[in-house]
Length: 256
Image (cartoon, rainbow, N blue to C red; front, side, top):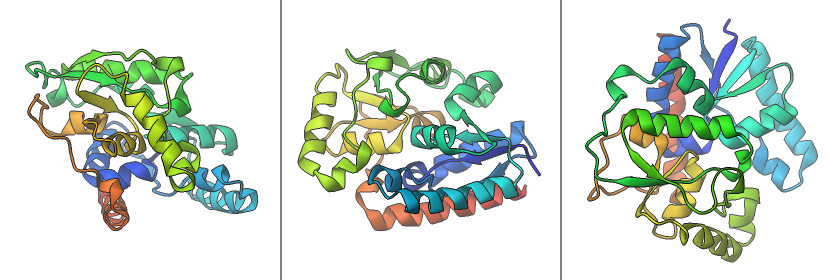
């Protein structure tokens, strides 16, 4: 059994099974005994106040962690990070974005974007607004890749919500749209980098060109005329199919 388990969350596998597989492969190369769990942390259930249902759902996740005898859970999702930190058993969450500066990027990625003509605005996730080491990790990655970046007025612990959290989108889409529009109106460049797939979907929904940081790591170098990936999360059927692909990719990666 492994003392480390990788958990990509829900929204990232729904968006990019290729990105999940690529980062899992890198982690597996560093931690050969690493396991993986692809399951919901239950935050949406908790957000709508279904305490008993959340307890049941998180209990199922906890059982998977315990079965793998996990001590640390490497998470790519900021919501998962918070839920495991708050509700977890003996396992400790370890943010992927804190970990990568310690283990390094795959060598072939370093400097790949040094000739890019893009300046990316960095959007910090509001759910980890006080996790400065996590935020620093994102900036380290972008610097290692070679991308030029800038900060919006509200950044770090003062970041603004993308409008997706707290189940606002299904409950009050008008409010969600106003929140995300307020956020993107302060961006000074036409290219935004996020480290939450839900943040990306929210911004793409109002016509903002946004990339997930895994797109920049494992995708082609972004230039000014490069179109962002399609907003897959706008299609529930496609998102669920991607989750299936992601899980299949994780199983294949862990079997190596």
